Length: 324
Image (cartoon, rainbow, N blue to C red):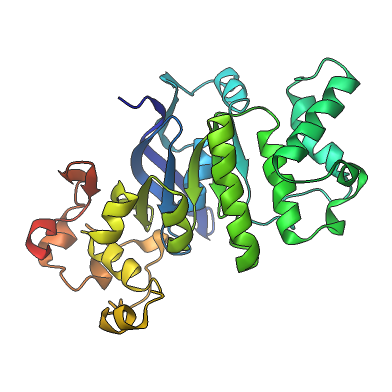
């Protein structure tokens, strides 16, 4: 049996938005999301822009204080400031933009060494320097890069610096927030392969957030699909690609380019009508119903449960049995 490392239960993240004089309305960025990640596993989290993927990652790490629900790490709920401090020694984040997530006034050595200083992980200067050089070696940077500044590097190298910084505290769990979306395609492959190698070498567990479905398929063991702050489908990567059950997942996967022209011509593209609704004024019942070709009146009345319809395959849809 695989051992669960991270468990997220009914996670909610609401942001108060001003709607006039002394009035606010909650923007439900994440609304009742639940999942678990096993040790050594990569869970891919996909969905279109604005669906709440990044907010899930940041809320798990308590960069945003959760509005509701709980995060359980290695069997222990994270509640107090002490819990959060200890959790951050074992859980880190690789940010999306390598251009804005690194301090331009700090050298590479200082950027990678900052978590070591914050958590007091090195007893002397020599140990600190050795650890920084070891981390740079992990991500394919040379020792002579240590004294240089972030602006002297390319996007791919900057992302490597960010990954080395994330590895500094010797974490078990890393939230990878679209770590390759700002990079050239040729560099993307190198960075993705490096994530794979580091996982094997250091026994890491990833929550891999992305909107590129081909990247997610390559690196993930399981894939979860989000829409408007809700989880709509989750299954093994192979299963979700060959047999998507939710209408939104089916539409997403129909847009993935296929390298074989004959197969590509035979594939029918499922085009969604309408725009994604605002999380400030989300539709009643199922959040996807305003763009779903199978929606009925029942879909407007009640939010569908996120339940297991086949072994290891979870879907939130009232009509999942009828449409598949």
